[in-house]
Structures are given as structure tokens and as C-alpha cells.
Image (tube, rainbow, N blue to C red; front, side):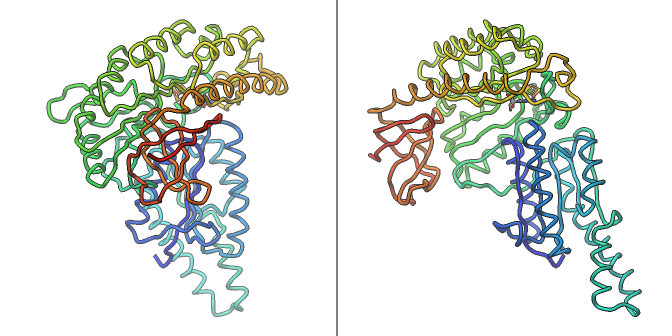
Length: 473
Ligand code: 5AD
Ligand code: SF4
């Protein structure tokens, strides 16, 4: 193809990060190498996120920067993909206002990206032949202008977006960020339609991979040195995979028990689970499975049953609190994190106080807190009792204060304890390393970089809101 370097800019969640690893893997397989700066890349890919408005804004900002790069290097291939491309109004805007984008694909046809690149290259060659035929009467600068015009024209764009996944494509390569840990997708899409959320529209309906395909992938990863896997899905608890061997249905807990048997796999994590589908059997698995980390991310979204109903979450405040009690009864040391949305339409001061009191009652280890962001096409965006921005911000500040205090206290309780840490790599300070405990606590300590990927014991000497500090034993 002539060009040989690429750069991927990824917005959004782990699902998107993992998709970018696949895109990377496919490009590497074709002989491309990754470069750090988008200015140096022959191919730039922006993998977009739709979850909140600021993700949209950052995408259009990045596209603006790429336009400048493209003015200097019109040969650069600009590709956009990900959740935003599954929204018709976004694609329309890209076509209208950013005509120099070369390739557009969605979340359901990542595997087609290499073919789309080939298609683009041959379309460009055809264009070039057209200019070359006219070249006789052109000066060099006229030729450059003609080429630039043609590069910016609509004709050379390749675009493929499907409304939903036809089938799960297996066997795609992925370039992992870490040697010792890896994402593993177990399912795609979401059927829940929480009223604030765009994901069911951008990721389609739930589809689970066959258990044998997942187990084979994990076995390969373990053989390649991976010790920790993060199972990914919008709602992993509703995993329902059909065995290719005997047609049996596997649920998420079946999968966990099978993965727990794998020799050499030290840690299993998963993300994200929906409280409505958190079964007693899965809670039991936390106690029984040696490799399943004693950590759960369990998004609550709001503490008021009234708001939860209008969010279409299908559980009450009491249901959620009961789950937390069950989890702590089964595994007293389990760490719990959550997602909370502040300022959902119609949220009263009373409702918000219920969120605060739930947070105080659960005492989360950590939390992701979000200002409600209306998403075009979702029911809640049409609700007429939207909360003014200043009220949202005021509540957000109060919630963050409670959450941070809790995280701080939880972390302080680790001081003096010895924990097992899987070393992730070098820390920010020279000579420092960091890694995670089984409970997903970030630990910073001094040590040689050769320990990356190893399990070590660390004595915790200090703590703050978001991490622990310790001494290698
Ligand atoms: N506004 C704010 N936060 C949102 N989330 C999802 N949709 C929205 C929205 N429209 C949050 C939820 C979810 C997390 C990934 O993002 O808390 O769990
Ligand atoms: Fe969005 Fe709800 Fe599905 Fe999570 S479960 S992806 S919040 S619709």
C-alpha cells in the first residue's frame, strides 16, 4: 500500500479500548507499525464514544486537528469508527462538515476495516490515473491542487455501517497493551435500554460468544504469558453462550467456574455487571473460585427507587442493598465500586439525598460519578423535567465529597497490611513500580522494572484517596 505507519486515538470504555487493540492487530498483521504522534502516521483511526456529550466534543475537536495535519500531508488516511458512527446524525455531520474523512465504519464491522482500506487505496489509484491523464496541460502546483481536491472529494470515501452485528467474527488478531493481562470479550451489545443510555443503539442487541471460543482464547493468552483476564461485556451477568460441543446453554457463572479450572490463570475480573442479573450462584463463585478476584464493579446509578424506576433499571434501592449485604456475607473482604449519575431528569433534592445515603451505607471503595448528559434518541433526553446545570454541578460536588471520603477511609484501613500485587509496570516517579491488588487497589512502590508481570508481596505503608503506597517484601 505504500504507507506503513498508524496511530489510533481511542475514546470511551474498555470495550472501545479492546476494539482498538483488534484494529491495531489487523494493521500490524498487514505490516503497519504504530507511531505515537498522529502527525507521523500514514493512517489515523479515531475510535469514538457516544456515552456523554463531552466524548462527542472531544471527537470533533480531534477531527479539527487532523484537518490541519491533512493540509500538510493530503496522503494521510483518516478513519473514524466506534459508537458515534452508529448514530445517523453524526455520520451525516461527518459527511457534510468533514468531507476529507476517508474511511467510516461502525461497531459491527471492525473486521472489514482492512478490506475497506484496500478499497480506498484502489479508489485513490483510479483518481490518480484520472489526474495523470489530464497532467499534460498542468503545472506542478495545479497537479498538487487537483490531487488535494480529489483527496478531499466525496468519491474517495469508503463507508460501511451496519445497524447490528450479523454474527460474531472469531479469530481476529489483537495487539495487547500489557504482556501479563488481557481483555477478553465474552458478549456484545445490550438489551436493557436504561432510559439515559445510548449503548443499546450503538452496540446492538446482546450476542454471546460460544464458551469453547472463549476458553480457547484464554488458553492461548495464558500460553502467551497472560496471568490476568478482564472479561468484557455491557452486562456480563446476562451472558448466555451455546456450547458448540453439545448445544448446552452456559450462563456467566458456568463460564467463571470453567475459567477457574485453567492452569496458569491467576486472576479473573469482569466488567460490567447489572444488579438485576447478579445471581446467588455468582455471589457464591466469589467465595469458591480461587482465581476470581474479590472485586466487583456494580453500577447503582441512583439511590432512589423512584429514579431507578424511571431509569428502567429493574431493581429497587432495597434490592441493591440486599445484594451488597449478600456479597459481603459471602466474601467479607470484597471491594466494591460503582457508577452513579447525578441530575437525571426529575431527580429531586430528596431523591439525591437517597443517593448520598446509599453511598454512605454501602461505603464504596471507589466510584465513577457522572453528570447526566441527554443523549439524542434515548427516552430520558425527551423527559421534560431536565435538571438545570447549576443544580447538577452542586449535587455532583456533594456526592464526590462523600465518595472520596469513603475511598480515603477504605484505603487507610490497608496501612500495615501485606498485599499481593500483580506488577503492571513503571510508576510515575523514577524507580517506582505500580500494580493492582486482587481487590483492584492501585499500589505504588519501589522496585526493579524486571518485576513487571510478576506477583509480589508489598507491605502497605501509606494511603490516599485513589491509591496505596508500600514497600516490597
Ligand atoms: N449521562 C451520564 N452518564 C451516563 N452513563 C451512561 N449514560 C449516561 C448519560 N446519558 C454512565 C452510567 C454507566 C457509565 C458507563 O456511564 O453510569 O454505568
Ligand atoms: Fe447502558 Fe443500561 Fe445497557 Fe449498561 S445496562 S449499557 S447502562 S443500557
